Image (cartoon, rainbow, N blue to C red; front, side):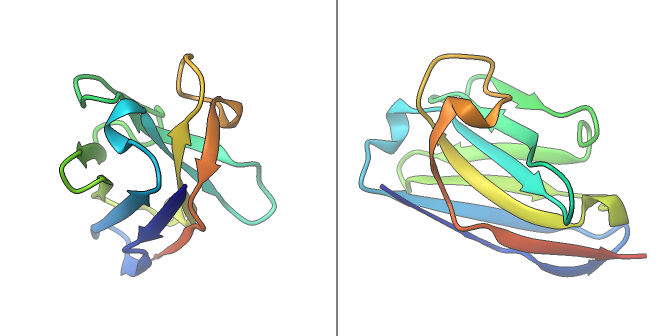
Length: 123
């Protein structure tokens, strides 16, 4: 299974970015997908998740109302639209594929991870 995250970059505060995560090697549509991020010196934290059919989405309080997770099962791709970005959103963003039923908010619920894409928000 391979997850390829892309779309990161440098953006000014208040700007927007859209991350993509393309999956291969697994029946993508059967699994929930999540986005996590990790800033230097900090633990990896939950950002957003979406169920296998896209019917339900979940967000960390810190990004609720600013980020939107979506998926296109025909393209085996999950997206994270990020708006009103803040300097504290700066981190490496990872996509992950769920391995077990749960809240989708914890890293141990996922078994495959993308390589990460850097998002830097300047003030």
